[in-house]
Amino acid sequence: MKNGLRILAAILLLGAVGFWTATGASRGWTKTSVPKKTLDEVTGIEGVTYEKKFVPGLDFLGAAAVGAGILAGASFLFRNKRTGNQPSTPVQPIHP
Amino acid sequence: MKTQLIPLLALTLLAGRAFAAPETFNFKDPKGVNNAVFKVDAPLEAVNGTANGISGTATFDPENPGATQGRIVVSSASLTVPNPMQKTHLQSPMWLDVAKCPEITFESKELKNVKTEGNVTTADAIGTFTLKGVSKELTIPLKLTYLKDRLGDRVPGMKGDLLVIRSNFSINRSDFNIQPHQMESKVSDEIDLTLSIAGAAPK
Image (cartoon, rainbow over all chains, first blue to last red; front, side, top):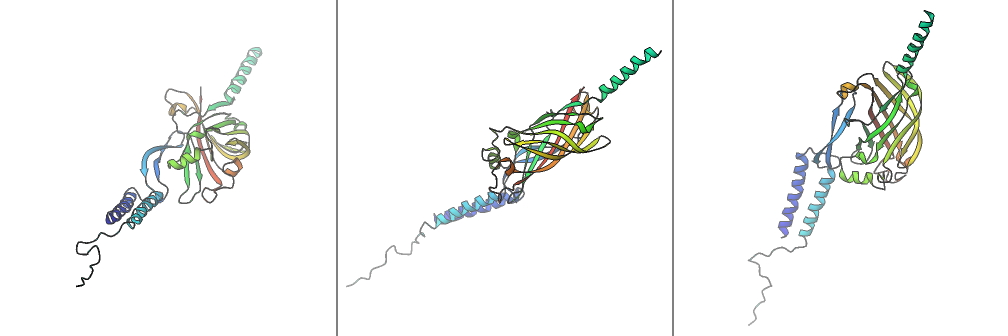
């Protein structure tokens, strides 16, 4: 369980960084739409329309880091798994 | 001969006056290109937003551009920013309160420093700017471009003229009761506004 949470935290963090990098590594806020400019040739006005597109920003990375931190922190709540060679209780000396 | 010339002269003068009469331009854009852009400085990156719910009218006389008057309306609900949380905050009662204050308007009273070169006029418009229910008198720079008989190029099948208005100016949100003097470290007090709109006067 302990290792599982740590692995999950690492996957979350690396996945978020990978996704953020793959989508352009935006150093601004996360966007769910992006402006698209169109030029009206008669008037010369640059119109702005929005296209739906998810662009993760630094707040997305921050949220992923917090999530990964919580998972990694939670892993410390679990004890280490005991190995089969170690006795569960100390061996008491046998007194004759 | 003289008696025939006088009515002819009068008609010519009347026709001349009719051609020089101010035209009324409607800024409800069927192509949806008209827009107002705002820019607010904030940590991480500046917040850029756009509003394209523009309407209003202006009277413009190509022979006397200095007499231009008009009222431009921006629908507050049409203000859009790319971040959904910022958009929700922007339209909420704490910021623009679009439910109670659905319109942002500028009503021009007079133009000063009018300079015309060809079909382009620049001037300073003195008028009333209303935002979130608060009205202030502002002087804003304008650039007017008169495009005679160009409406058909933009809207096929229609004849008429176009008037393009461009303006860049700044306001302080605290002047309009938008979170005055609060969160200035997160959202700057100064807001840069850019207006690019075209009005049509069909014939």
